Amino acid sequence: MKNKPWLPCFVALVEVIQFEKQRIKKEDSRIKNLENDELELLPKPMRRATLFENEESRKKIQESRILKINSSASNAMSKKLAVFNMKGGVGKTTTAYNLAVGLVKFHSAKVLLVDIDPQGNSSVSLGIPVWEIQLQLKDVLQKRVPIDDVIISSKSGIDVIPSNILLAEEEIPISGLPGRELLLRKALSKTSAQYDFVLIDCPPNIGVFSINALMASQGVIIPVDMSYLGLLGINAVERAISMVRSALDHPIEIAGVLGTRFDSRNKLSKEVLDSLNQHFGSKMFETVIPETVKLREAPSYGISIYDHDPSGAGSKAYKNFVAEVVKQYE
Image (cartoon, rainbow, N blue to C red; front, side):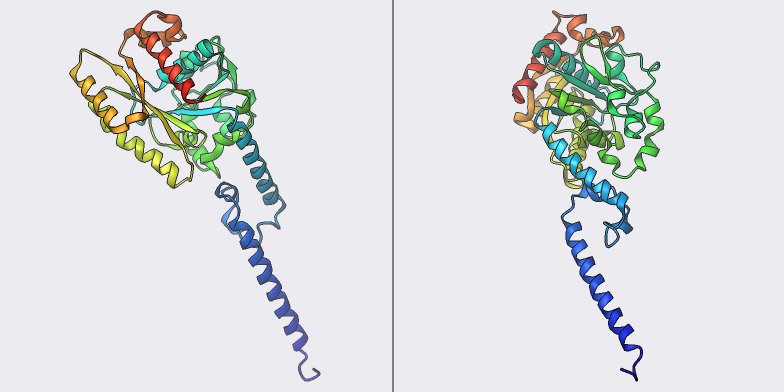
């Protein structure tokens, strides 16, 4: 030992290395058991040995686990549905806000409508002056305010989280946030248990806002207009949903496909509807929404089709559609 003064240091170093190996192995084992959304909260360098040494990281993981528990509890109480199609002009907004009003009006449901389309058409259709609002959905996604602070109660009895074009200006900053695809889901977990239905009106694309809507939903309603381009767009919609299922590991289901803007005098309308029925089978809603001027007029008055033209074809069709949705989730 006298001839080898370095030996004690060497032995101590070996012990330290062995201890570190064991510690890293344990942490790796624990990390493997973490959910993907928990890991997204953390920078990559913190995903190994330093993960649990950092107090802030530890708190984030604990919050994520609590969020998951709360989310599971709220899912049992509320039905979350996104109204989505990557093609514009298919009746997404018309379907979203008339479904919301119908659930309240005919089934006494408590409904939250989330307008994640920067155009803010669902909000406007319910009589909300979107350019006068002080707070909106973008403030929630950027974690500036609690979600309850932006909810507005409309005259139709629906609670609305509104948006306007300022949401589009924040798309790039929001896209850079950690866990960006889960922002809406986490925000809704704090309030959705109060509602029977949470409906999300999506923009006509597959950007960060549509991904947030799909990730926050249990099912998706797909309105399809009776046009050749509407039929072609189905492939893109199915690919988007498949991507959410596989790449983001979210088991979202197609709640149903709704034929819209149907004109019985038009041969193309009948052919497109037949093709949709063949492709989707039982996933098609039995109700078909007709093409009517009254459906296009109603938003300009800030009211639903049921109030604008209560005895018209559009009102009857949407009332039947609402009944189908309720029956599906009874």
